Length: 346
Image 1 (cartoon, rainbow, N blue to C red):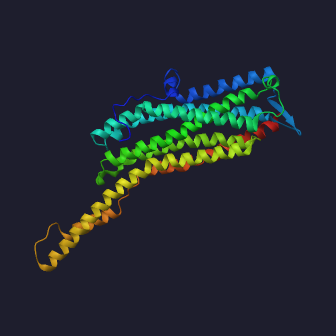
Image 2: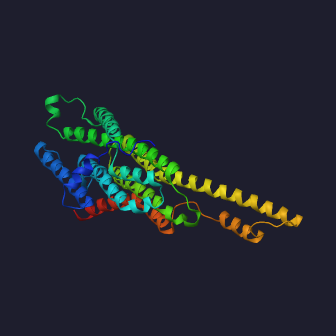
Image 3: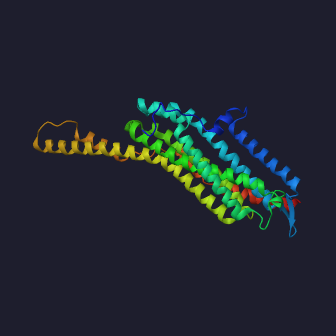
């Protein structure tokens, strides 16, 4: 096992902060994004940065105002999804324990609590490394050129400098934790999953967990796509979009993959055993010796095993996955439609 169950574990900082809110995580996340954007609007008024402007006869968000809105939404999503994910983990514990051995049940309880202290510190280092990268990107691409420090503080740039550092840090930490959680899940399944070929539907809980993990990154992808509606620097937007899509696919596959491999191995072993019995029974029948199970029953069992689905994904999960794939596209079209409406009625 990657971590012993008695290692100190605790929830993420944002999960603990969400617990202080009387609102559900989604509403808390929306409130966080709204408050941050309100702070940006106040700061814009203070430094004279326009929010709505008219260009070539059309009215729309100022480039900086739109980018700030997207960044605030990214921050809200990044700090809310861990709280939602932990709630879902806690709700899934009974189904997970039903397919694990005793040590696995202890381990999954620990995993539902949060990362170990060692990995919490490592995730902090990942955050700091990402934040440093955000500062460099901000200096490289986003700051107005030829500004003195006194002039710099009279622009909107400090807001983006701080928010970019935080968002890049959260992204780096998120990438590290996806890899860490993948390793924990893989060892949990490989070591403690009890495969019952007669009740493989019990493993569908892993399909639901995989879907929830992918959903978190798909929502992030949808928010990042909003950057493409406006003129935020393309290299940053495109890179963030690709990384979020990769993380979404990786989060799904890293949960599903170990379960499929474990179930396939058990099914293949059962197939090999029954085929050996079929061969032995056939040889015994040819020799006129008494055999074991009737040959017809063994052949029927072999056919049943061959058709046995090992993917822990039910039809509802498949439909949800297909629908979730449209989330980024719908977000982009929705933002583009909102801009058209703004241009039409203002």
